[in-house]
Image (tube, rainbow, N blue to C red; front, top):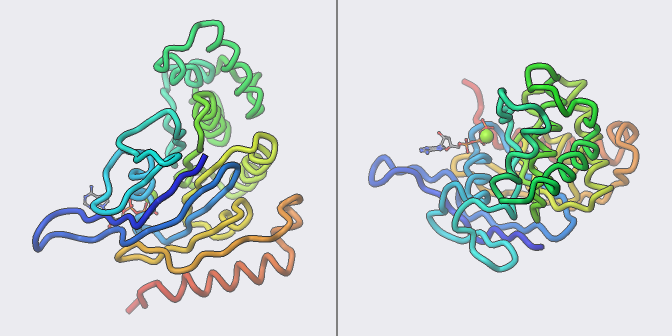
Length: 255
Ligand SMILES: Nc1ncnc2c1ncn2[C@@H]1O[C@H](COP(=O)(O)OP(=O)(O)OP(=O)(O)O)[C@@H](O)[C@H]1O
Ligand SMILES: [Mg+2]
């Protein structure tokens, strides 16, 4: 699997009202790689994710998966959004099964895969509960199970833990990291949380706003094995501080 974003730009509007939201974005995600993009609110992260997901088209440049240009949404890319996107009237299991039903899989296969992926996200016991009956963190795990169940080549995560409080957010980060280690999935994470990006990704790209562009790319060669330890380790804190300074430098000064 290889996802390539090649010199992608996005302009909304025409003429005098045209605004360039993304400018010349290039990066790639290889098989088994976890890549994160970090940028402040409004710098074009979700716009970029929509282009990768095929929900919108670039004004220039191209997004490819295994060399094939992305022309629309596809089951090769599994999306998880910031806001809980589960169907409230369906149980956790039915939510996970939903995408597979659209794919036309057989009933026994859907049942087996639903059970398996609920197990993967540690929610086998919650299979028959509805979204309002489980916590926000559990809902996001159902959303991740639903995305994984369609067996995508890559998982696309747009601020997946943004709506969760700090403690749950930290346990979800550990969960996602463990999942990545166990399954070898390829993932693209978009977040405004620098720490989250550095904890999870092997490669981190820093975005600047207006127009959204990549200004810095780093390889995170740290031992991600023990996340609680990593969070407070000196090399991690030094890298975080260095990149935070880079991010702060791009914020417009408050008058
Ligand atoms: N369909 C659209 N038409 C016009 N402008 C748009 C459209 N979609 C997004 N924009 C503009 O593009 C900019 C980037 O928006 P986007 O949602 O991609 O940012 P973001 O980085 O995801 O922000 P956040 O962190 O708040 O989610 C914003 O200024 C927004 O107003
Ligand atoms: Mg966004």
